[in-house]
Length: 438
Image 1 (tube, one colour):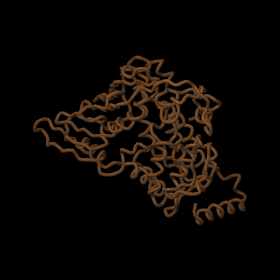
Image 2: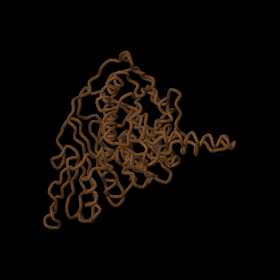
Image 3: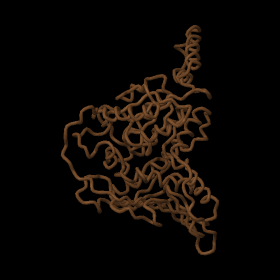
Image 4: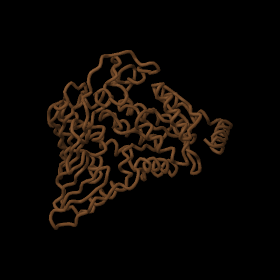
């Protein structure tokens, strides 16, 4: 926080106190005033979750001249020490270090937080950050359940703060151009879209439970999840393969790719979802989430399919991952490498492969900072509502598989026609943590 901001806060507080109004002044308004960011101010950032994508995210923010990385937080001393060194090489020195994110949120000098923790922590950390008056940049999927996503949308809208979901493909030019082409109508009527991820990977073989590694606050890592003995296969990156903490490839890659379908087709929630799949490919594998799944989403005027395989890197249209918009005049195929249009005979002209031309994560981070400074929430590349919509679709695919039935969604009442699926809409919080009220 620069001197002008400190002076503003100090003088404003003194004025209110002198008038005898401090105790009557609404605390939420005072918090917003205290955390107001001017057009020329530096934005002080705190990062929660240092491994993998958290570090990728902070590197993008360090490229922005208006950003100051003030603090980092992780439950693992090994990650803290490693990232302190890594960030020092990038020019971020004298960092404040926390192992409990709640202590970081108490720091009044922090304007915004980046959340890159396991999925089961996103809801509490985002709602707590908003209550502390922080802007939030949150990893996808925004939540590990449907009702968590709903609670996060409510908290964001109530707060008036800037929340950007890290579905950074929305900030890549070639995805924007591909979606613009889809929405131009040139493909003609689109009755089907496809998303897929074929991931070549080895089995995650079992290992015995073990002692918690030195320097790890395992109780904080578990947070609201069920208490279990420490097992290396459920920790750090591999958390995503266990229902307590994540949703497998469906909520990992599926969120990124299905999001492009929702964007291109201008839809939000499917009417029904049907899934088949399970543990069919990898032998002696401890993952709970499926290694194969095929999901059909009915949106009324078109359907979308999501398919993933773990064990092969080959995929449709010669791509290991991608999205296809299948129209009466041709097919548009897009992935992280670029996009092209394959015409149906002579109905439309082909569009040869147009390759990726910018780094989406960098532009996504810049967009977040720009909106914090301008206050123009409508200019966010990926607001919380967008993150919620695609998280809903991803979780629906998993729920259909887990209950073994096609499920129909009542969007007005936010429930399914299946009692087993409804029981999985809201997670059970453990260890004294309470589900956010909304």
